[in-house]
Image 1 (spheres, rainbow, N blue to C red):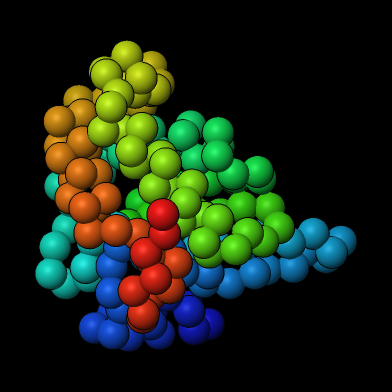
Image 2: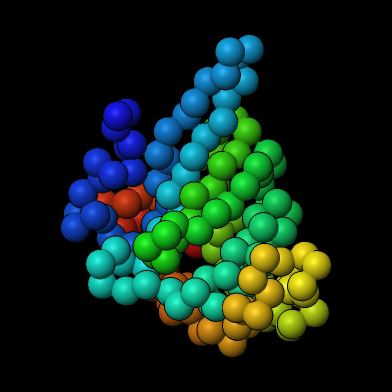
Amino acid sequence: MAKVESFTLDHTAVKAPYVRLITIEKGQKGDEISNYDLRLVQPNENAIPTAGLHTIEHMLAGFLRDRLDGVIDCSPFGCRTGFHLIVWGEHDTTEVAKALKGALEQITKSTWDDVQGTDIRSCGNYRDHSLFSAQEWCKKILAAGISSDPFTRKVVD
């Protein structure tokens, strides 16, 4: 079985919230995609409840695309501590951290009308959303500051 980089990371050594470049994969035709770890809460110390995380996911899907070129996908970790962000090419972690910060700030100011995909036709679990939870968690994450480095706190402005 192939080793998965994320499972080799020492989760006790990181200092969330942070952005970390996990890997850059090169396709057969030379195109590149990058996978980032958007860690919002400290692993094994906290986890965002599913309804709040689900709403953050739906909102990041649009808000990150507004701030970063080449976003392919932003998907939550099963441990509920953050997200994988997949993009075409490579962005500096500071650039990604600033985009994440802006998106989380936008979530704190949003209304229910700003949340995409919350009805039975557009979401596979449309009843499991909470804008209130999403906003409260985003406020906590923003208050802690988002670092562009997983091991040394380099909080972005």
